[in-house]
Structures are given as C-alpha cells and as structure tokens.
Image (cartoon, rainbow, N blue to C red; front, side, top):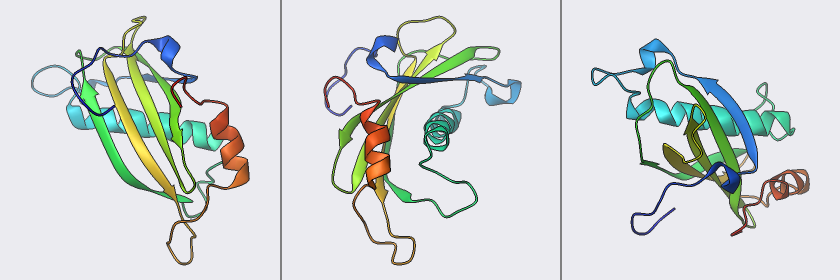
Length: 148
C-alpha cells in the first residue's frame, strides 16, 4: 500500500471477512467516523481472525508486536453504517507478516479505507524476533493475497 495514490480495493481482493457496526459515538463533530476509530475497526478485524484461527490467546502475552502500520481513506463512513472488514496477507516473511485490510461500507464493493499492519513475532521472554510459528504460517497461507 505504499507509493502514489491508487484506486481503493474491491471486496474480491480480500480473503477473510468480519462485520462491525458503527456506533453513534464513533462520529466526530464533522458527523463522520473519526479517523482514529478506523484503527479500532482494523484492529478488531485482524484480532478476530487471529483468535478464530488459534493464533492469539487473550489470556496470554501477545506473540507479536506491531512494527509498522498505515491507513488510507477514500470515502466517509458514518453512523449507522454496517461495515465489513476484509483481511488478507500481503507478505509472509521469516519473522513477520504484513496484514492488509479493506473497510467496506454497507453493500459497497469499493473500500472506504484500507490499512496495513506489519506484525513481528517475538519470544515472550526475550522480546526478540523469532520465526513465524508453523501453525501461524499455515493459517496465514489461507488468506494470502494474489500479489503475495
């Protein structure tokens, strides 16, 4: 998602989906969802994937840290929109994974916003990078994007 301005992604660009409803208090004084709230939507979507696929146990220390993130906005989202967040893996490295997400408003096929997070897997004791665990690699492979 780096480089010059490009067109928003389509639903078909993503492999895993979860739904989120906007809340009245997500809106700001401009009467659209505040930009910081988008990160909560994206974090919820990727965390849901991680939990559902056995990659994250909320009772334990996270197996990864966020090394980088970004978000690009294309069109407004507001209350009471129903959002669908699409998730895909763009890059699966030795110790890291780049997870990309598209946020789709109601029935729209074009993303209202797109985001990415680079997660680096770490040893919980030393807090140093480790290889992506084999079971995580298998799960990430199920949502690899076409460009990966």
